[in-house]
Image (cartoon, rainbow, N blue to C red; front, side, top):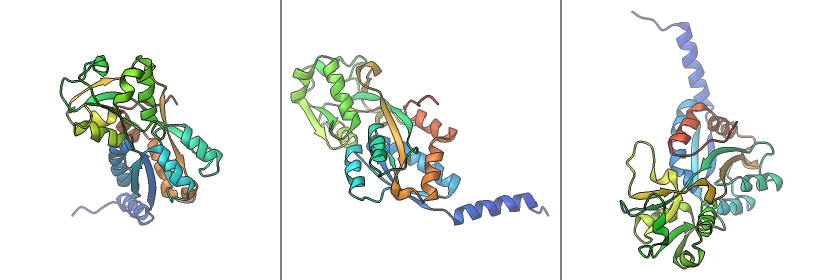
Length: 253
């Protein structure tokens, strides 16, 4: 009869010991990254035993909640300014912030063939409503406004704008047809392993400022090993592969 080796017993013991000390992370994540964090969270839990309690929404709203005492331990923002601001104001741990993804903006319609590869439809009379996330609280919404101005369409398109609370809601407006098109994240319409729904224009990066999405350890998570483990895991090859698979870029080391 085959007997497990001492090495196998030691590995099993180490695994069980790590799971016995497993913790939970209170995570605030930008709405555009809700899909990726689902997959990353599964892999993180499998590797560490730690679990994530995820809230997704607009980065600006999370900022307001955090400075008001919300118990989030890690923030995955849609920009790099909010984490830096939280560090400067004493709500996050100095030196813990880093860029985990570079966002990509698309103009998307739920209708196949509606959006052309050059985005010319944005100036068309076929478009009566354009969904964007609130540019005051959502970096992708601010990027959308930049694109509209860069295309010289501010006067024509601004009256057509339908402002959503977050990029997730902007996607819903376009998905349900309440807006013919919406400015959303590439990750929302081109998830790995799933067919692309509708049609989209991948907006050239030179039409809007770089969307650097930073992570940061918040003060509430400073003494939680699971929170530190999550931030370390985001830098791993496994996590970075998933981030790329969802259509994001990665910052240079």
